[in-house]
Length: 359
Image 1 (cartoon, rainbow, N blue to C red):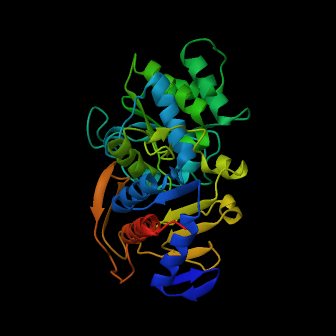
Image 2 (image 1 turned 135 degrees about the horizontal axis):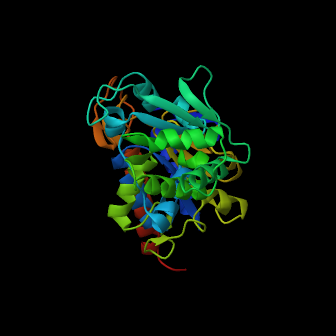
Image 3 (image 1 turned 135 degrees about the vertical axis):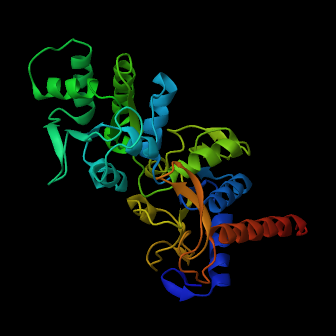
């Protein structure tokens, strides 16, 4: 197993020992990233509960943009399979969805089910769009993406009636037999998502129209249900008082680090995601598939689920948790096993410290 402590290569046992020493001294640890399979996510929650750590995820900005809007106005959503099978009109909101596998599936085939079966699929664009895209109509978002969605909603409600590309775009969506509004929640933002959901609900008064969020490279869509069944809460939770407390502001790890509230971090990225800038400013342990000696104070290479070992991951195509077997098995340890070893060693250390005679 590849492992490093302070940039120097070492063996697994030494690296785990160094990680235990770092965590044992921490009074306000955080386990962040959680871009991993379900077993590792569960092991991360177990460790957090035992050491009083808080939890944050790599894709929390997008996750809370969706959850915040959902808690206030609800959601009118579809699934990738339904969108590919039924949608005759797709509005791509922003730039991010143009670079997703789902967009390629939508552009590569016609609807096969429902009233629109066999019809040509029309792509519409709001905001930035990809060069060479097949959008039949594109509208800019000069004032911001959320504001552009609000403008479409105003046209749909009749509050604006000027002959503009936005009015034409709304007319095309309203004429669809099955419309889909495709967006990235992190790009659109919480208020933008809320506005888009309201737009979809109002369109459903006269036609069928649904929203569909695209997922990023993180595993937040796996973390959310796991967090719900383990704690009854969304991911940003803390265990400092030994019971899970949910607070999206308080347990935002970037805010915590900036405020000096964190003294140790475990960065869990068994599936690669961008390393946050704040990681370099706090004592850290990294459990990563793409390991580099300089990534953290202690770095332990773990197997990538679906490649080096099997694991349950979010399946974007099915919009469900799915088991992925190893495509190229290796002897790298799972992130869950390393987290389990940390939990055991920390527990042993606490038992030993209690059994020592007082001076």
